[in-house]
Image: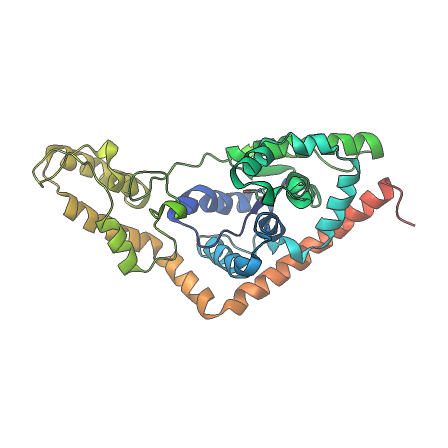
Length: 327
Ligand code: TRP
């Protein structure tokens, strides 16, 4: 029996190559080794975007299209949208009965976000964010939860809630273990962390012309001005991208050629561009197919939602029995 994984993503819109090499490749590997449930957390998005939810639907499509074109195979895992499984909300309600408010209030992500975004976000629903996340995980009896560092406090809270539940009502849930994904910090075209909000990201869905424009403006070693100048690959963003898209052997050669000055930045960028297009070709093709026929995505999510619901209904039956509300 394969162990069960649950992980979720917020519908943040189009993803960049940092996501591809961090989360997506990682999940694509996990879907072979585990029984994976992957979920798009649209209610979680609503908790911070309730004032203007108009883009959430499109953003769900964009993330799902990027995940699928990046290698997540909905036939190998159960891939669904949170709100398609209303039983998650029912379990969230039941968990809220036995979760002390103080546990939610002391969550560092809550305090930080309220500090950063102000009282508009200090809602009942947002306070419950990590309890909803707990429901996401345990409604499918998730055992392993691949997440980034920032999510560890939520996982700790989930484990506490599970322990309390099992103690009060009997053993229903396994204690979920976090599995830290070592996200390589992919630099953006300006050298800061790649992020859409910094405007320095190469998106998975950028067309070749856009990619080339971005590479042309990508910062290399600022001390290498002319072709013959010796360069420092270790501070060059283009060299970092070579390590993602080019072969190991060629990266070694490029390192030497840059250091000696025989390779200029323009030629270096051109080569990277070609390698990137080659690497991304299947991703671009898959995405194009999904964009031209969004119904493929809708159908996949509907099927995934049905599969997830079957699992969650079974869990909820056990929960209600344990909590004595199955009249
Ligand atoms: N809160 C997570 C994030 O911001 C997304 C998420 C929602 C999640 N539900 C989850 C992650 C369940 C892991 C498990 O990235």
